[in-house]
Length: 592
Image (cartoon, rainbow, N blue to C red):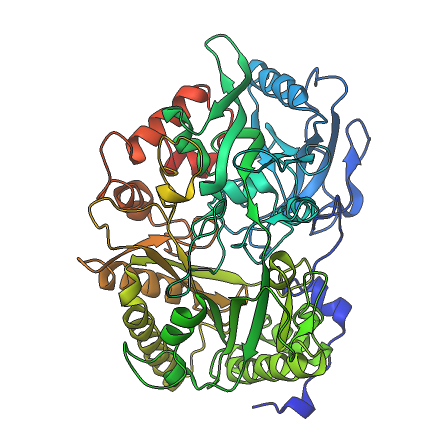
């Protein structure tokens, strides 16, 4: 095995060109996007637009609506597993532009897919290697990014355009002493994109902690009080605004991109100061110990603080454990931070570490144990050198930590919906199973996984969190409560990451998914995939026909009323978009 001091040298430029996916390339409107936009009407090949050299331009859409910029651009999702050399992209400036675009698409046989930050894995926007000649991606982040706060409302609210980033919304809320206490790690997400897949944070209330009005421990979708979308009115597509008490809104709160939101209004609560402490000295078997065990356990951190995340690098003994707690005043030993993304070491990896990623993708998966130890060393030393083991600041400044330059990995797993009393048991069972399987494969000289295990908890989309009259929770949110299991009040997110292209990785994900579906399937828990991550693993992700056609829909029929389940959501999507403008080949399988 190669030692840390004897890493084969590979230039950073060479590594990026190889597509290992560690660092972003290009920025546009504050979010990572592919570069080389070529305006419609340009002649000849598109030069370096594509990932594999010059490509021929797509046929120009006929009579495209005036005043909406149209250009061709490559498409890459977060892990670079969905890549298209050329797509048609437009940048509507107003909601009325979106209406004109959609009606034009209906008249000319085109599809329209909203495009946000592209920070996702699932082929909900476009499908890898699909025919996109008659698909228009509508970039919402270029212009549809307005943010307006109403601090005097009851509740206080913020209204944002579909392309406003979560970070920009939180920054505007902060000016009015408002905020959201439960946030996803990447602030770059567009709000409509985050809501489409019920984005969530890693937060539960600590034992005895009183709820803060305006906030939720569930998904961001549960904060919506009103939304505006482009829907079919019987004669044409038009804008329509829905209130939270309208039964028609519930499928749209988490919609997978099956409808086009142009703006959303969301409730907010008082902004809070939080402390985040990082630990890298707790053995995994102590941290992930069974229910009631002594020591520094995940269960105890949740009881004391409610907010925690473990990042367990492969083949290492001590995870990176982050623990957030509400702290109105700065603890003397904490470092005050005034901006997000404070773990700079995870965004700027040393070249010898990125070289190891290059080795993995070029056919040396056995380097995985060394890579795990390297990532642990970078994290532990980085926390010390940057003085970020104990930080304190506003909620967004301590919760946002993933940005465009963070290492890009494939991800599989999902949520175990269960009771708070069952947290330790769920985590213990999973980590024991995972460790046994990794050691089994290592004994055979196989290393199908080389990224960390990530473990987080959050609450469900509880009705009590909504401060306006409500028709109910998001219909197909992964954290929708089960009325037949009222004691189930938490979602435990169990995700495993890997370097794209690693041999045997998808087979391992398939084995893991099948185990999770069977193990967490009784009166104590159920399993739901995470919409934005990898699921339905066959030879590739999203290819198991039984999960797509049967098991996934069943997940949203079990334990919920027949009047508000997967089937009613599907009917609603087809009602507001009967001509299937907002679909693609994969969506046609999942939501026919």
